[in-house]
Length: 121
Image 1 (cartoon, rainbow, N blue to C red):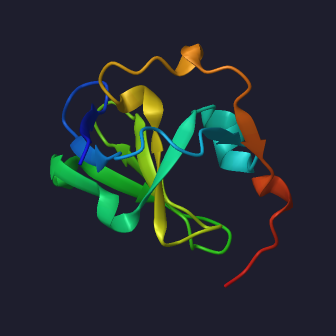
Image 2 (cartoon, rainbow, N blue to C red):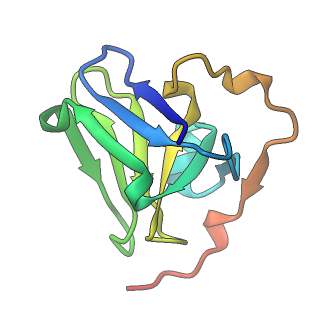
Image 3 (spheres, rainbow, N blue to C red):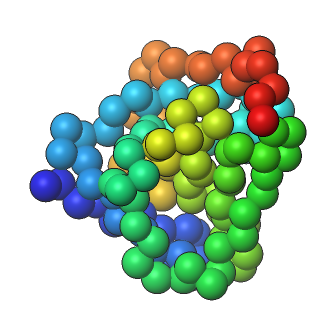
């Protein structure tokens, strides 16, 4: 088991992700929200991410089909993770929140076409 700690900018929200195979499926998304936040993300199964402190500081944003749930810190505004619309059994998480990870070090980050994903309920 390879647990990594992530946190928002102010440290109010801290989470751990289980990454036994390292960072997988590193990507950006071009949907209207992700395009604006510009985060580089990776994914884990729902059981692979646990908020260890600051759950009360997390706020959630949903829109469109309300399937994806985007979490951010109410104090500093940093996006930490989201439950994915394209795969609701996974969390996508902001790799820049993981201690010791440089999101600019990854070349050729895949861009998912969330903008063309059909609206589902």
